[in-house]
Image 1 (tube, rainbow, N blue to C red):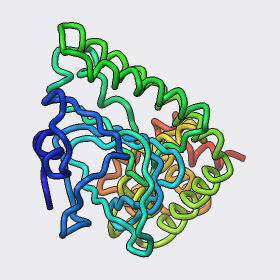
Image 2: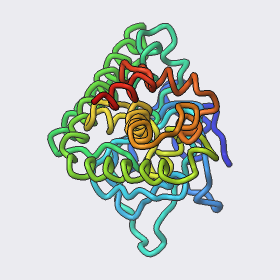
Image 3: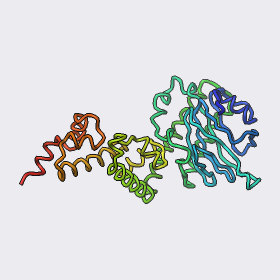
Image 4: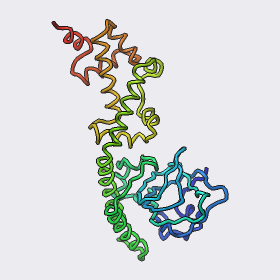
Length: 304
């Protein structure tokens, strides 16, 4: 594992010129980079990374999966995310175009962006959940990057940081818009994922998993679907209007209603079968979701 505390350290590792600013860097990825003998190696950085890339014969590994960059895509990494870069040995030539922007959190100090940058969900998406840009979107993003590059190469003055920060804010806002478009335009794929989620929860709720392990966590569900928790939650919010946690609870309440209406199990027994250690927790959740206690639901259901 290689860890980079500074942007300058990473530039040196890749055989690149020192960045113009110690806390902010931008790289033209068509520039030849120095690859190490131990490549691919897992790496982490103490700074943010925004990449807009088109590359053939290059794959980025995230966890156990690889992402090809043959189309124009935009990806984001927050500090401390683990990644590695490797070359496909089957082909010698590598064609690359695009830019990578590195932003140290200290560069944002005392700016409005410092307070809100973590609110953009895509920092927590995995690399395989990158933003696929249309030609029009790619042009918009590249125009903003050109503005950043122009300012980056100017002589640093008291306005430089403010101008660059403004352009970064614009870049992030457009990325958020384009991600929203991606969720909408991939409706069929998203519906299929929601179907898989529903099937996964049905299987989980109809076995002894609930008693043994309790309610499934958002992380568990995301892992089963090979998605990051934030990406799954945003996808579900777009398709169903619910977060992952809310969706899990909704499915749980459906199972609870079925047990309360079709069996003679006590509320405590239903609670236990649904993975709750304490019946009071089940009662609170059920009433929050239905405006009725379990007993009130059962009584109303059994009215002749």
